[in-house]
Figure 1 (cartoon, rainbow, N blue to C red):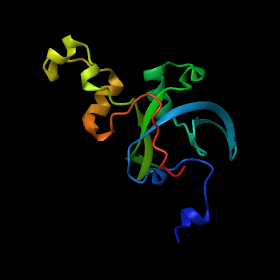
Figure 2 (tube, rainbow, N blue to C red):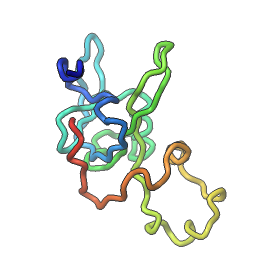
Figure 3 (spheres, rainbow, N blue to C red):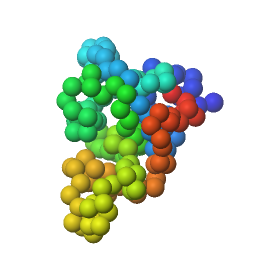
Length: 150
């Protein structure tokens, strides 16, 4: 038995992703008390668990969809596991990025430019360094991965 099964969490953890990149559609954002702190929680459409938003993930979503959390509803993001430094230890954490752009959907002038001449957004530049376009399956709007257990 896994201890995570014995002590289930209301909130999403990196281990819930099972080392996969997961395309999700954002639902609502709420403030909730966790211990003595008031935290932002992002809930996803069709999923039970919410994700506690840290500053890094909130800023990354803001870069893509704007600063107003009410405007995030219905938009897609990709969740993935990354190793990060936290309190002097390297631990798994959830990180977010925008969904991969379909290469055929790029404007013709972008397709013709060599890769080093394109100017991606700051967030996309970081995501491109870590992931190839083909690592997250191309999906049609509305497709969701229902196999994720959260």
